[in-house]
Image (cartoon, rainbow, N blue to C red; front, top):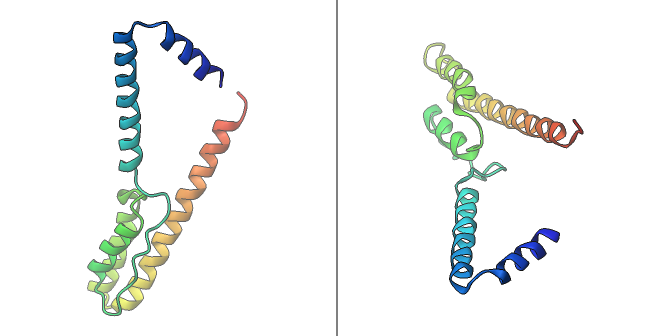
Length: 126
């Protein structure tokens, strides 16, 4: 609260032209912050239902959309291995998709755990 009082005091001591400039700058910063928040991926998985008939490629695309907060490179290896199981080893698409859903859910849990760990480190005294 002290910062807002200080800012108000500074604002009142400025000329009218500089007050207007400060307001414009504050609006610019507020808009920029709003845009950054809007551009950030969701923190929770999106609810995209699994269709009854879905191929493995479409499932991967759906899961990428469901979990936009995950790093694609971290999932790529496991997803590729599942695609290989399906195409080369003949594992049914339904079974591969079930496994892909587990992989994405596990990666999401690891993502949450990493965020919690980072938060703990940020709040611990140095």
